Length: 177
Image (cartoon, rainbow, N blue to C red; front, side, top):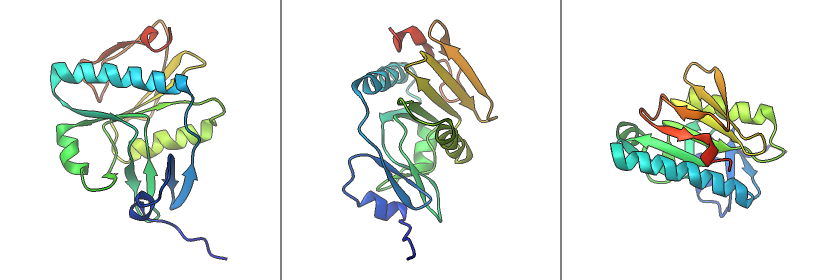
């Protein structure tokens, strides 16, 4: 039996609560635990404060981004940022076409390294300037830039001088009280 691969548009029409489309196949996900949402909310809040000062773009929580076509791949970062310039390139009905400038993934317990790295590569290859992996249990953030090399920051450090958010500063203690 031949398995049918969905397009991003067909995936958009599905009545799913949460999931992603990887090479045309739906990957449903469990809703995250409250701590996951709290951390994603804090990251979003800090980015929104930065946006009020700079006016450099828009940010959101979740939302689909078509990172690849034929077969289609749609990822949904926990938090994202788009510069006004990038927003003009990707905005459309349904999912955004292309990567956000910044994709933030809050890592859930049990997520495998291979799957996380696949997401990082998907975002970067589709044009993201940066990807942050937030590890609540480890109280650490791994920061990836367009060069691909990751940088690990611990709870007592400050995330700053990012490629995607110039002038942004986030003391990681705010995420891991």
